[in-house]
Structures are given as structure tokens and as C-alpha cells.
Length: 77
View 1 (cartoon, rainbow, N blue to C red):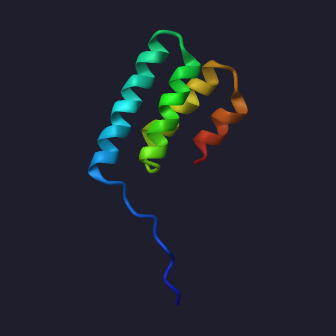
View 2: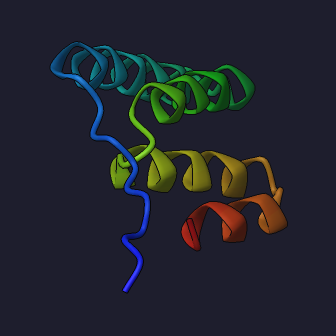
């Protein structure tokens, strides 16, 4: 049986930076700046691709922007 290549886990620093980007995204959502929120959530995902919270937050921001296809895509990641 061949071993499957595994995705390495993000470093603690990446997780903390991702969390900060996530918090900034929520601030932008609170200020009705969905486009900037999406940028922050995308950065959070780049830093920590295993963050379900970041995908869910970005999906919600896409939904607020009525980009339903993108919202569905994030929900299935």
C-alpha cells in the first residue's frame, strides 16, 4: 500500500496570523465592507488552509455580496 502524501500542518505563527486576519475580516464585515472582509478571510485561508472558520466566514461574506456560487464553493472546501 502506497502512503498518501500528507499536507503539513500550519505553524503556530501561521495560525496566529490567520486568526488576526480573520478578526480583521469580521471588523470589515461589521463596517459593511464585504470586499475587504473577503480579502482578509482569503489571507486567513492562505496562512492556515485547514481553518474551517475562515472558509465559513468567507462564505458568509460572499453570501452578503450575493455571490452565491462562491459561497457554496467555500462551504464545500
